[in-house]
Image (cartoon, rainbow, N blue to C red; front, side, top):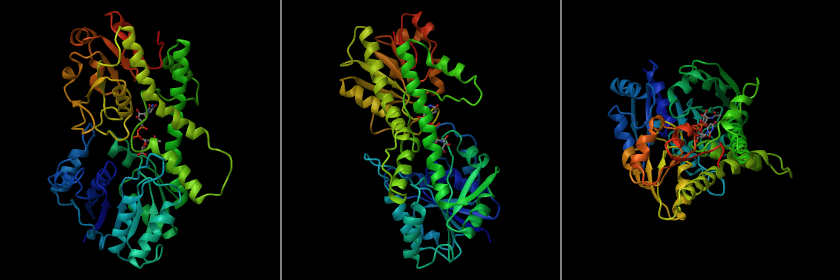
Length: 444
Ligand code: SAJ
């Protein structure tokens, strides 16, 4: 008989992970998804063999169709399916609130439900990113209390994080090194054995706290690097030099890898993982008076970029003799990452809010996002551009590189472009009398 793997949370991590485990011969997988208003539709969608994730996701639709067709994978809202599972993976969202405090309601309630149906010998793995210390101090006591079993003895518990990025969901799970950290040696060994069935690269075994910390640290590292690039870009603008050229030249030095400046940093991870790290340190670490500056400064820098984009819009419109108030502005790209439909913490939203506060009439274009209750969204580029006074490019979707200066000139009411992702060659737009401001470049 095949072993049952339960994956709780059918999101950007849970779905590809479940589908990959379902491909393993001696496993069958049950996904658990709440029947919520926002996400409940995914249950039927997957059970019909379809992929609920949009954008360009190589191999995922085919894999879901295959494993659902072979009855190796189905989704339910009934968490009692955890009974008799060989392994249960927790892939629920762990956002932070407006004060940067982690919101663990989902993690806590899912842990309690799992605990109720937990069997002896089952391995539970937390895959959601959490503040260091959370698996030991929050998840473990809930599981033990609800199940009456002892962690590390009667059942096993580990933390093992994903490294997925929209657009590379399957590839990153299979091909990147994996870190697993159990609460004891046997838990680590069990987790190692499980992931060795789907991960082709090396699996590193460590303790639970180190694994949790590593996840937060690697995302904070990326956030700091992007903040450096953004600050560098703002300085280059003031000097009147091209930050992207400076970046290319700087990166000719071995060991230097300046990241890309841009219209902002979004996603489920980078905007919050610094806060998870600092929360864990404050809650479970030793007290210390020195203020953390680099990581928090990076957060502040990256959060400023939508404001900077709005300033560039205002400046460009003013050169065209228009005010933001009453201008029709098309935002190009709602998702936070190119060629995906993922809008979590997108920098497009703060930009839209600022421009709307200034009195602009906003239309948003995105070829991948299906619908949005927050903004006036169209998937037709011509509809967005037609009659607008400015185009503000936030996301580097492939389709935007094809925009033709002649077409823009004929469709727009005022030919103004603000390029937040270094997509356009300024000279060819300026040659057609289009006002173009490019983030990180001379803003004269
Ligand atoms: N961005 C820049 N400049 C850059 C790189 C990114 O402005 O040079 C912006 C992007 O436009 C986007 C945001 O940052 O808005 C995040 O982009 P990302 O490429 O980091 O995408 P994520 O957030 O999906 O992926 C990150 C990755 N973390 C690291 O590389 C350390 C990924 O490996 C993690 O799995 C993922 O977070 C996660 O789930 O934690």
